[in-house]
Image 1 (tube, one colour):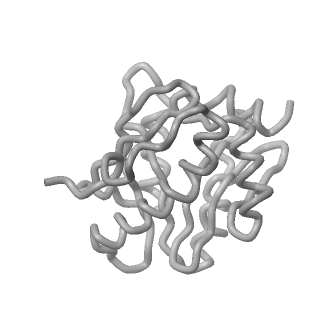
Image 2 (cartoon, rainbow, N blue to C red):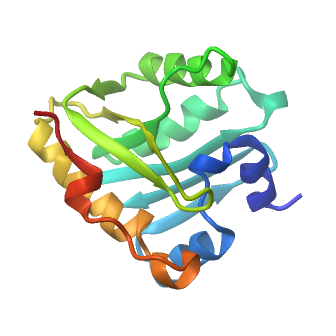
Image 3 (cartoon, helix red, strand yellow):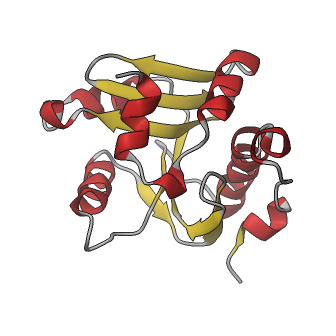
Length: 180
């Protein structure tokens, strides 16, 4: 099974990108969008001067609890940059949502409660509210995190959206903003 099939089987359709979009990011933005992969894990992430965005992190069910996710996160922490990720709120019907949150909290991630973010689920043509989590050795302001999320939305999530999905991205200010 290839990397995309493994991601597609694990993540809900609302959180997935089209394979064509991910491949375009890997090819066209190879200077900062990366895939770290083995038989037991897949991590897709974008690295910028000040921060890292984890787009997807998957660990094989048979390898969970063995420290692989912790090791991958530590490799990113060692770069001494802010790490950003998006998480769905806990879903009582999906035990993995709670496990993921507990894992990230154990790794020192915090929830930015002041950023409103409506993820544009391009494959399913829907929108879902996601929480923004971050890790850093120092506190970050909501404004700093918002700036990072604007970059993520405009450079990663919206990349080639019209060509691949057939419709233009929503205005950034309609998708990610500080809560009133």
